Image 1: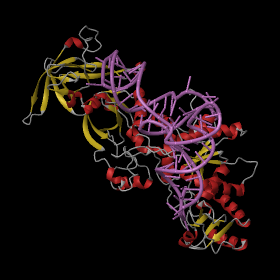
Image 2: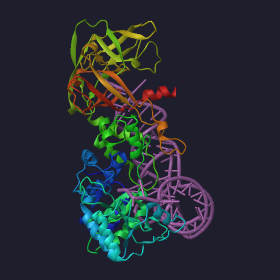
Image 3: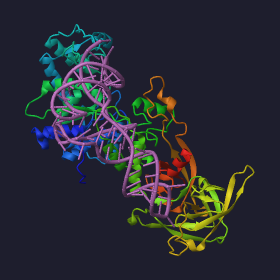
Image 4: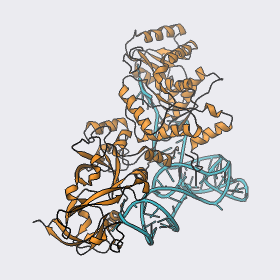
Length: 561
RNA sequence: UGGCCUAUGGUGUAAUUGGCAACACAGCUGGUUUUGGUCCAGUCGUUCUAGGUUCGAGUCCUAGUAGGCCAACCA
């Protein structure tokens, strides 16, 4: 896995700097800290690749830590899904941790803070506290309970823990600075009362620690050296450091929080609320719908872990606002699938071709390469017969020289088979072409080595024998949103940009080698794109999802005309 | 009205820390090709503005401008 010396991102520079200043390499440790309240999406994938990538680069452990301090929203179901997604991406965590593992330690530390006069129990309503908080430009004012005695605070906090109070009646606050220009330092809440069962600690606790109090201390407990998070937590750093100061022992590693800009992908949304809305309103079929930017959606769409990792690697990491074009993600999946996906033939919009000089009732099995770029992929046999399907768009009665496909009087190569010539076609009452009559050159069989087989014919078409064709449901996906940044319009709701044609379900006719395709198998339908077998596939019915189309220069030429 | 962060081609990220602005994607032009795919070659185009320091500035200083974030008992 030795890569050419790659440019370091700014976080790697920070690590390098720390190493240079004497931080022991063996003490490097990272973590990926999801809250188990939803499914992971492509943005999380970047963060996962960043943290686990750092672990790989420095041979340092990376913990998977669930930030589970809010029992109201968190569920075991999400823990399981997150673990599956991280593993699928190809990463191994050192240990699986939960912030809830540290509830007792956090409580003990909170008691110490109270005893030092650094925390107090406030007994006001949230509205009252909000009013005292001030604004970014005006300082806050002190709570009337700010100067409670240590004894009183101890007693009340103990009672909070014992479940003697209703939710919302008391909180524990850090006593910092109500006049700080950083609103987060204006006596932030450390604990609230929640009479809710937790997915791991059940009803052991009825007070739960807040994010700021929990996260840094959890990093400290795990001796995480570099705690990386997104930019919106930049202002939290001061508080992170303040909380750390309360418990820090110089003989231990002091975690360092650094922030990076979240990666934004074009033509999609990732917020839980918005994704949920797409699911609830039936715009998509579920969290793993192949149009969703969730890891499970991408997996079902046919994306590979390699493609996602390469994508994350290419887009890098920085601190500025960004909108990464989804075409870059598509490039990476094509790049990987081009190497690993076997080629097959399938016709998605069929028109029948009758080869009039091919003996009726005859059939033959022709040899086809599984991957022209990889000889080790081997070959397979495909059946040929008198009646075949080709794509409607591959035939025109008349066309100019730029049209490399089949036209009356013109010749094309049938991939892996013969050269055919279009002689005539028949139409229905509305003038739609219903059948094309061709003749074939019997000596032009692919690979036969004959002079005729070596003839240069400009166009090559994919095809499938009518009588051998396998019918399959094919789901053609397009981007979910027509706007590149659907949720950043001040005057318009993101739902207004939903692409009404993001899914088309059609029947495809496939070569019979696909009969035993397994769920998640990925193939290239030649000249069309990459497809994968959907989990809805049954023994009676094959279902394919379109992952991404091939680069289509022809479509571009037509568009420009 | 305050604080914090950011600004490099159409997009994303680099630049040996003050020394020839590079890589990938996208675009365009050719070549190869039994996939209008892949592959190969070429090409296009950039340091927010104005001052300053310096032999030399994307990098340092000053002042602007633009964008993002900050007042949940969410994370």
